[in-house]
Image 1 (cartoon, protein in one colour):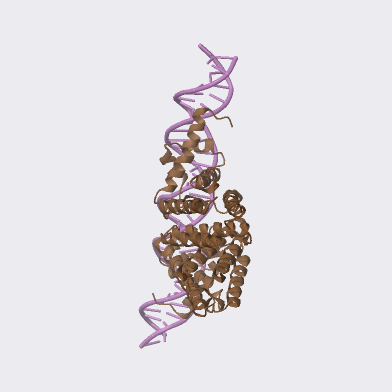
Image 2: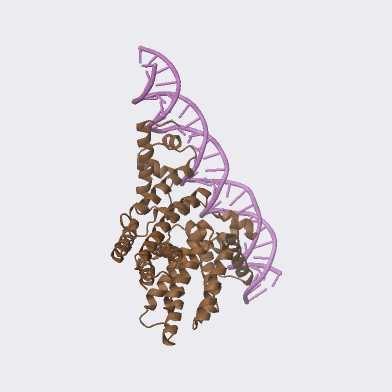
Length: 193
Length: 193
DNA sequence: CGTTTTCTGGACCGGCGGGTCCACTGTGGT
DNA sequence: ACCACAGTGGACCCGCCGGTCCAGAAAACG
């Protein structure tokens, strides 16, 4: 499908409008009609830019949001070379999710995209990238002699990912970030030895 | 509402039938008609036993499943008094979720019950109970001198809960239990000092 | 027994929401 | 200027699904 500049802009407007809607309150479930209203478009346009309909659109939004998850942690995530940097990263993660509160755009999206292969792929890619940045950070700390070399960087980064995911999940049901903080702090303490 | 013995039995059949259906494959979303077919009942019965319809029924199923989550960890969960006991508990959790695989009944249920207060309450209660058993276990280990007293039992149990939740979430998207294992093992290592 | 209450089956309804269609309006290229 | 094709609006369709209703079977109760 050929897209002119105008077309590109509209397509992007749909994706970002949907994303920003999901970031707001009261977005337990989303319909194409919601998105149409919010983005000031029409059914025709939605199916013009996303011929496969809901799934294709929602996947695009999910990819967009997944990108934000990582970029919101920058520049800290890519430079975990000192304890101070780790702390800054930890704080940025907590701040981001505290601000997000109970509304988890990706969570809602995953709930709607009922376990389609594409949905798994988006989440899988996100977690992979995320974890390898963390693993890299741990490895660098080890090379600098700041983390004992007996620590398994793979396992530690996996535990961080799990802790964050779980912390966010708890945040979604209880509205509290204490679990997220506990998980992050405990793993960092573990790395400190 | 008065329920005869027969009525009780039917009601329970509906709940357990729905639960067992959710435990199986291909249950990305569930409709009342699915449940009707599976449990060999009729619309009339469903609304007879669950006058508030879908939400009431699904909450009942969620409570049932939440109970299973804890009872599946027994007797280990309530007797975390030695490192061997902790290992047995860890193994039982991993085994349970490995067997469950990608199908997370509670996860699906939460996806359908769109953030109703009742849903949060069920999850909140489950996590509270779970975490206090763990905190109790950590405290007992400290009293026995097996865990250093500087460890914050509250934080450690919160981190465990987060790690488990996140591990299960990763399992749901990737099909792998490595994150769950990493989180559990790292926290237990941390407790060991 | 009879009667009252519970239990069961299933036809039916209404609206919600994804998806289709088509006519109309730009816009870019030659 | 024209034409082909991208972009836009919105009416319309239809299957799904939660929920209603009622009639009849079956218990419980006196």
